[in-house]
Image (cartoon, rainbow, N blue to C red):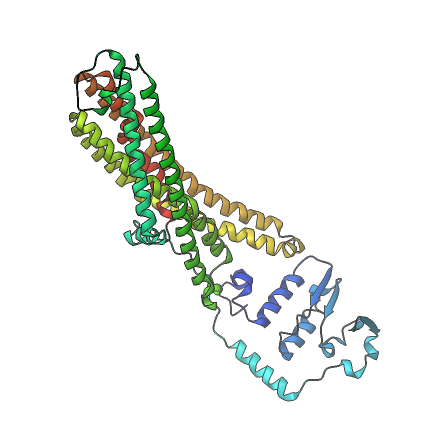
Amino acid sequence: MVNFKNGDLSLIGENGIGLSGGQRARVALARAIYSNAKILFLDDPLSALDHHTAESIVKKCLTGSLAKGRTIILVTHRTELCQGIAQQIIRMTNGTAEVFDPESVPRELLHTKNPSDSAAEEQQDDKDQTVEAMPEKFMEDEYREHGGIKASVYWEYIRAGRLSYWALLIVVLAAYRLLDIAETWFLKAWGEAYEGPRKPSKDPLSRLPSPEANIQPWLYGFFFLALAQSIIFVFAQASTQLMTYTAGKTIFENVMKRVVHATFRFYDVTPAGRLMNRLSSDITVTDGNLSSHFTLFAQLIIVWLTSILVIGSITPTFLAFSLVLVITIVLIYIQFLPTSQSLRRLEMVSLTPLISNFGLLTEGLGTIRAFCAQRRFQDRVIEVTDIFQKMDHFYWSLQAWLQFRLNILSAISTFLMTAIAVYQDLSPGLTAFVLSPPQADSCHQPKGYANHMVDYKWNLFQ
């Protein structure tokens, strides 16, 4: 214990990586001796020890006050050390057992030490006693990125999904948006056609007959627009899945290459729970959530640009008000983003101890029960769970803070569009077209971006 800075409270690393073979044997033996068990099964704890240390343990530990009144079953090849203290010696050979009295043990069972070996072991023992103090911890703390996400991280993910697939996706989304606008305009013209004789115009829909006289052309037109939009939607989903699969596969292969070719030192200082966190939670995000929100972001940008063009061409006055709303939203977003990213990173860092604890519990369940340490490990699980839930609670509280403010701004923007449409005495068809969900949502796009896109920015590999 002299070599450890914190004595018996020192961290020895996962699976005892900070200990030598002899130290592991002595730690395991100490745990057994200091337990409350009445029967001890010791599986060759003397094999990793030099002769002097093994002899000291047999005399001071196995026959000391801590072993009094307990049954000790010791498996060992070093029978010469145990002959004087054992009450019974059993030799196992080829599936058979021979029982000997300690006083009548055959000479071939008593191992004698070579003087040169003993001298070498004693020299090594002296060397071990002069080693420097053990480090306070063997596991490196998990690194947490600070500040915003670099553009190179976004570019890395886009490259993983192939630029050609991204270009195809953007083209398909733009086509879907144009068909959406065309469908809304078609419904606007269809509704105005019931108002009576129409004035001649350059609109191709003005050439269609009145729906009161012949509704078939209107039904066919709407059907083909809806059919085309459905086909484009299928293509958009297929493009998204193709890009998602390609990006996820590329990133996973790169991660596995680095993990497989990592040095032994990396596995010594990296807990298994941290690797599980990276290869489960983060990969799950890249396989689904991240790509869908990249797609959503591209779609929102296209919808926002086209809606601004449509609304600006019909009610240019609204553009002045929209500029003020956008500036307000950007200011809110600047306050929200750094805090949101920091809380999300803290949440994911606190997830690693939670996963590690479950791994330790499943691997060492027998040992935990043997030492009656269930309560201590249960308290540890509750502690790390509380830390994780605390970060998660703060994060979603911040989301509610953002949601409240953006809902107010969205309601204000809808009210302004309605007031401007009424003030400018727009036709019912144009008013409905401007206030239709595809156009009115253009004022809600910053809200959608903040609620859907920012939530997953932390998931990009730092």
